[in-house]
Image 1 (tube, rainbow, N blue to C red):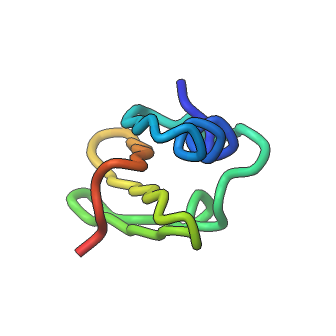
Image 2 (image 1 turned 120 degrees about the vertical axis):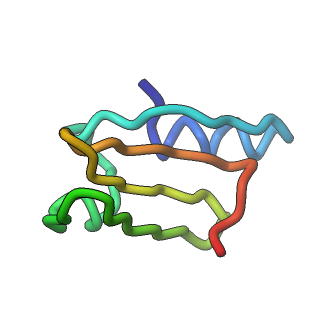
Length: 71
């Protein structure tokens, strides 16, 4: 699992990261609490352009990326 804090530290060192995010990790953005229907997604990014995406399949999937941009 990744974390927003780790992604920020690595980005400061010019290293990009993409990975899954654990839902109950401290420091997660507030979109974690949003309920989605199957097939829906929600995207949020911070001032350092780190993108967190929540996607609902059979289970919720949380993705974190400092390399990809939100559309």
